[in-house]
Image (tube, rainbow, N blue to C red; front, side, top):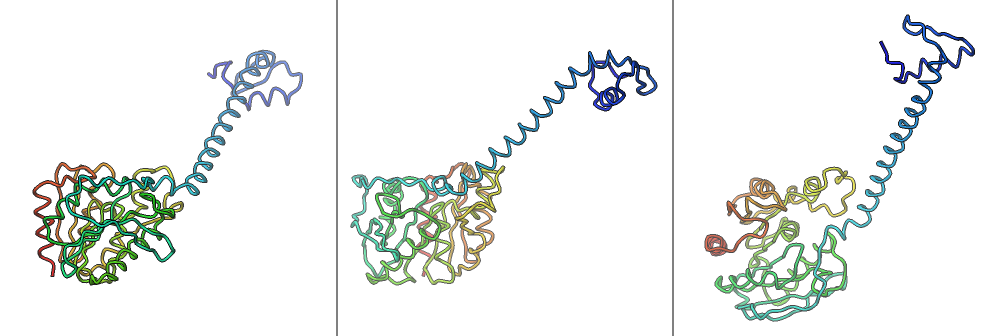
Length: 317
């Protein structure tokens, strides 16, 4: 039997519809209407108030979610890119001798670059760094290039290291293409250029490598697409709908027809190792890999990696 204090709106409606009836039949039981009015009306109002509160709560949640979607759409590039805007660069720990150069872009920006010239007839690494940090954060890698008997150029993206402009997918593509054009302008042939992309830089390297004739490409901690990265880190948001800068590397890797080396740490906490493995699997041959058991996103430049990288470079025509 229903407890007299439990709300039943059907019963209450019958009470008030029947006017001055002293008793009302409910499920075969005769109940005094005064008892209903005294006991149930109060609880009915509480229930109604709770129901309204719950409705308002749900509406508020959806409103907050909608506001977050608007915020993410208009401010996503501030969340995606993490430039070090300082123009100060410390090169005291850099072993190879470098020349600071300015790389002009097609949309009238100038990019800071470090160029190490060994011999322009030799191979040249174009190093495209990842999202965070600055040029000096890559010195520990550049120091090993000294032993590879080649030239190298590393550039700071637009908006990084004091460069003008704001980073975007198309902007970074233009920066990388401008660096290639600059290398060609000083006499270095495309066939002698090795693209080296680190994380976000790997996505840029894959973009500019499509249907070209570079000597080779090194992809360190590459991701399949920014959409897939967004789904991993922000699963409650419709990333596919919101994202402006998509970096669809997995759809482009098949359009690279020269040697590929993929390097990825299995403990990567930013870009899942499976993404790097998928990039490797999807790449055309000849392809090579260096998958380390314990490295996180920034791979340790240990003896094994350096030997693998040097061997790959020496194998290129």
